Length: 358
Image 1 (cartoon, rainbow, N blue to C red):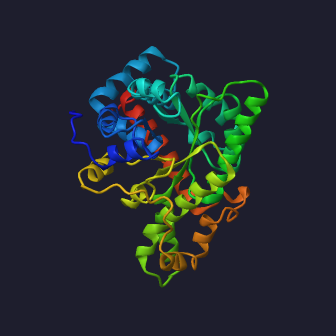
Image 2: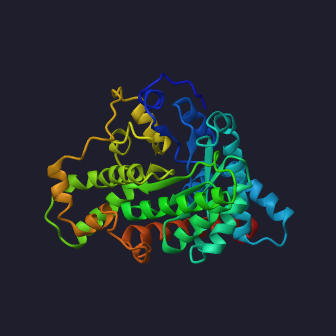
């Protein structure tokens, strides 16, 4: 694919503000195009990884067959995850120069820990450490559950740059940012280097919007549905300013795009935005005039409407959820189930190669 594009809003924002662009996919072709827009990193998750593999079956199905032959005792999951590793290593190579230029803060590609390990902090941290060795510029995703918070601190202390995921609320983001901070301080106290680590804390703004719309329908709320398009934006702005006020070194990352505001309302912040490539192209073709808006509050009328929804209050306030409540939050359950299904889908894809239908 061509990577020749006219400079647009994304590149302008990356050149004139601290806001940086990462691509929401590990697909190498998309990464090359995103770099042309000023992209300096990439995120991924089980659903996206499965989609990348499934959309390029002509490449990956023969490789699955080769892995099965090379590793005759490997199960479906082991083979599938080996493909994810190889996809990730290939994508990470494309960012090596950016990684060196940014001294580890950017130029990273995300690999997500297996959601089937979500009940064990040690298993998550162990796998995070293993994945971090795949390439020098890997960043590893760990979910913002109670167990995940423990794993995030442990993995950070071990030297893993963590990208916190399955996070939808200010409370989750702050708890994860503080866990990273504890891990960094433990390393520093032991004389270990943290200067090239580049942790980020994702807040999946669009998935928060999705969940609140479900709640509104479930509870038959009489409310302008348009206000929910601002819920993730409000939470992201609140989380960003909480990080600044608390001196947390991890950066906030905006993911799960549902509308252009998940980029435009955050421009100007020292944070990461990670839209899918289709959104990047839409923004770049828009002719939008870049304007820092991170410090501009959401309109008070919209906030007044949102704050009448108890589930939004839980998501918006830094103490809106306890750590024990992270895993039971509706968006968390929905997303973990989706990631588990993606694992099952990848297993099924491998099964069709190594044990085809008679």
